[in-house]
Length: 84
Image 1 (tube, rainbow, N blue to C red):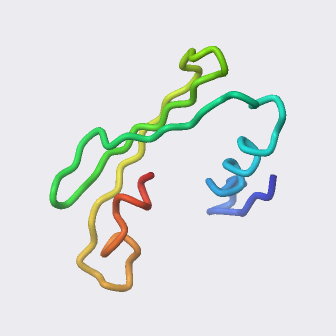
Image 2 (image 1 turned 90 degrees about the horizontal axis):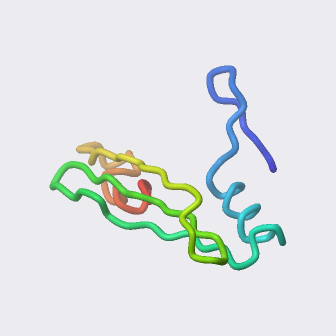
């Protein structure tokens, strides 16, 4: 997977992790779902769940994004999409 350097640490972007998850045979039958856990006017919290082929939850994670007043910021229009 391709990584990028953020403040001196290597980070694998979400799109790279998703390509690995979808393309690696060891994850055949697995699913990834996301749900809005909390939605307010100025913030959203999303929950992601990975389930294996037998329907067992093997991982969960949360992401929070806060809306922006700056039209140049991605969260000005895409707070939910960015959190997901």
